[in-house]
Length: 206
Image 1 (cartoon, one colour):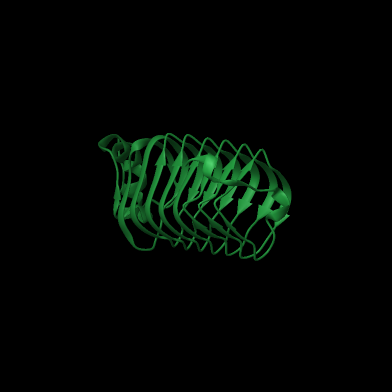
Image 2 (cartoon, one colour; image 1 turned 90 degrees about the vertical axis):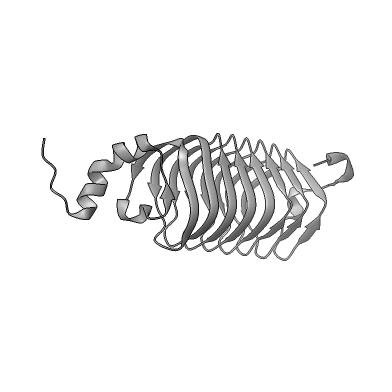
């Protein structure tokens, strides 16, 4: 995104009902923030810092976030289309009930990424460190995790049409039964074997 074409934005403009188009917030200090139904159209956030930030029903199109850090960024019920997050550090990114399409998370560290009951299409997570990835009840289509790691995965029990974690380092899986429809590597399947066997009711012997 060419920042030269974007008008400067101030943190104080992020208020409930704001519609911000082709704006750039650079080095913004957001602190603890709550703003409802904000709309961001082709905006950029770079090197921003936030505490407990809550943005219910956020609407985002073509927006990029670079090199920023948040303690918590909660966007319940958000609609996110064609965006990119890169080089961010977030304690908890909570996108429960969101509709996420054509989105990319790159080279980031997120302790908790929650997409509970979300609708997710064409999401790529690349070279990122995810502590807990919670997909409970989500509907997934063309979701991939490449490089990096997931320390703990809570799979979806909803609809899964293409969820590939075969090219990342996968740690603990909560409820192996939820892995139906997930693409795993042979090594991952071997490591998860005991959990999968217990799910099937099999008895393991040496």
